[in-house]
Length: 130
Image (cartoon, rainbow, N blue to C red; front, side, top):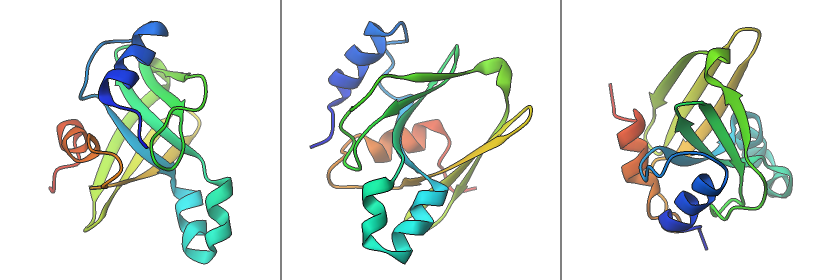
């Protein structure tokens, strides 16, 4: 079962981040998402994260595919992020982060039964249809 909003907020506060309840979403790396369509076995190697948009930068919290926290947070400092782009599709939103020397691509489900906070938070962060 997914971590509750309060569990995520408590985790963020414990690690020095905000108490915001609407600045995070569950994502999978885009590379692993494509592998998932190739073989169901790829699910065991997926890179799932709860990503949080904090004043300090982008915080990646390792999680299970169902949104349960399973590791320590990693910070991509705000000065390393040049742009964030959301591309909404029918069932997913593609998220691209451009950095000084690199980029990161993630995919977020627009709705999921096991992660009740996903849909509202994605809309809050920029996953609206353009």
